[in-house]
Figure: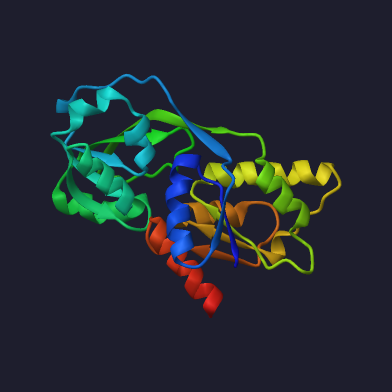
Length: 241
C-alpha cells in the first residue's frame, strides 16, 4: 500500500486517515503542527455585513467571542469549514472550493462590502478593491519536533525497495516546517530526495508554497476542492494515470 503521510494536527489527521484507508492508502499520522488559540479583540458585529472563514480552525479555536457574529451570513472555504459553521449555528451564504479567492464572485453577488475575516497567524493575504476586509488573527500553528514516524520515513525514503511516499500538506506553515525537517536530517547525514516522492496540497495557495520551497518533487498534486476527500481522490487519479 502507498504511504500517505499526514502532517496536519492530530485531530484533523485522524479524520483524514479514515478517508485515506477507504481509498486504499496506508496513512501515517505525523503532525508537524499543533493549533493554539490566541487572545483577540472582537469588534462590534454591527460593523460588518458578513463573516469570512477560510479554515475550520478559526471556528474551533476562536473562542466564545465568535458567537456574537452568528447572525452574520458566513462565507466559507471548504466543505468541512462550512459543516462546522452550520453545526455552530451560522448560516452559510456561500462555500468556495478552491481557496479564498473563489469567494470573491459570491461575496460581490451577495452585495457584502464589510467583511470580518478570522484567520491563523500564517494566513494568506488576499485583497479586493471593492470589499473592505477586517482581518483578525485568532489562532496559530505551533511547530512540533519531528515526529518519530516521520524521522524513520525520511531516513528510508530513498531506499530502492520503497515505493514513493505522498506527503499531504494542509497549510503553507506545514510546508515551511517540513523543509526545516529536511535540513535537520541533512545535518545528521541523511539525504532525503524529494524528487522521487509526491506532495499533495489541499488548496492552490498551499500548492504555491510547495512550488516555492526548496528542491523539486516528483509531482505536486493540488486538490480541486479544499477538502480531504477531493484531495485524496485527486491523488488516486494521478497515481492511477
